Image (cartoon, rainbow, N blue to C red; front, side):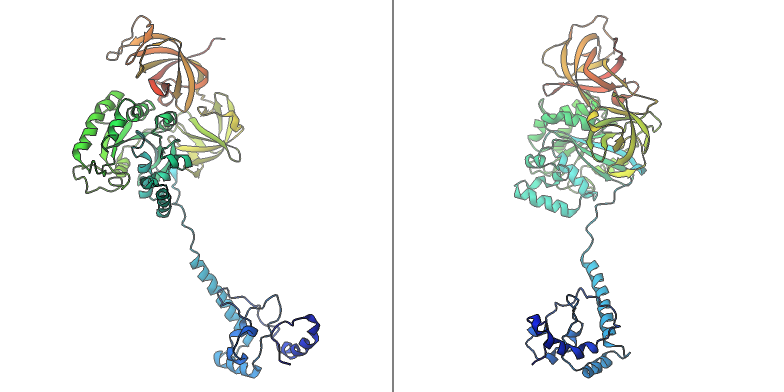
Length: 561
């Protein structure tokens, strides 16, 4: 009977197999090193499937992996021949099993190294910048719908390395499938599926980037007139506004006429307390414009008188620059396409702006923008003044809930303390998510912010067709709070040029007039006078989807029981 090199067909033949295995088992080296499989070894082919005669296989089969813990019995060659072969290969005269097991372990370790090289680590997201070290500036992108705000935001993130090329290529493929090839950059900020399908920003998109000197947070505001309340919420957190206008023939005119959002956004940004405005004349690469100086100057001339009227100083507060959001021209590096523009490109210009004066020693004021549940209660907002540290006790106004700060995140980076101007996520203890509303304020217990329902304010009527009388209702937007208010009485009219107040009480006010009025909110809101705390003393009144008036709080009235 021929010698077998595999398990028997049935275990009834076990006696025959034992007879063959006896001599083979006695010659095995029981003190050999444990076997380490070589992960890169060629696939094991059992001997009985090979067509060649057994002795033509050489020594290759000797170190084959042993399966299921059984002893490998593929041994056809006489032992003396094998010993000769090992003495030729191994001049040290080591045993065959030792050499085999050592070779296997070396192969295994080499294989592991190879594997490490093959499975390259996934590309890490860009190192999260340490927010508190650099000055923190919030930039809001505003302007008419389809002017290119999200595209410019996405391009800036790509140029500063916050979005990698592979992600953008993926967006580009997806946008092509939807026949929207030019939208792919805006998808870096428009993450919502509805926003991507329609190509319109709905909620304020957030992202950040760094330059050599400063840390910037991008707030990408929606341009559509239906989402102006969201835009006001974004502008209320900003230190700097970028008004994006389209130079394309017809688009600039649509955005700038009465119903367009270019005018309304510029005015709302000023009301929200934005001091510096950069006007980006976008789409200069469009075939209808082709980097034309005439078109650039035309847009500038039409816009400047309006911005002056809103309250921006043309010499100090406004800076115009041409750019192309889609190609990235004049955003980071200068471009040869417009030799007539001699100023800095957009990102270097942001870096060169003077530092803002912020007081870390002031009272803590953090208007809540949003809240959600995540292993506790988390609130989002921009710290307007003061500084917050981990473990600090704060008070949530107007409900007077005492809360403790469990964790602080500044632009997704965990930090121990935070200063004014930073966009924060704060994990709180001692309050439920349902008990918080946007517009509530976090304060220090020793210096609470004022809250109430009735206040006197100076109002400028910007746009209203008919007259406004006492009893008129509108929606009040103050910092991040939205509340319904009623104008209960007019105190006096104010002369725009001299600032003099009229002696008689007006029975009504109309467009372009300035008056002092008493307002009553539907519920208790947090307010400060404009003199004490400008960020929480400016407000906007809106009605029927239009901005009716802007104003500032002069005096807070305590309600008599």
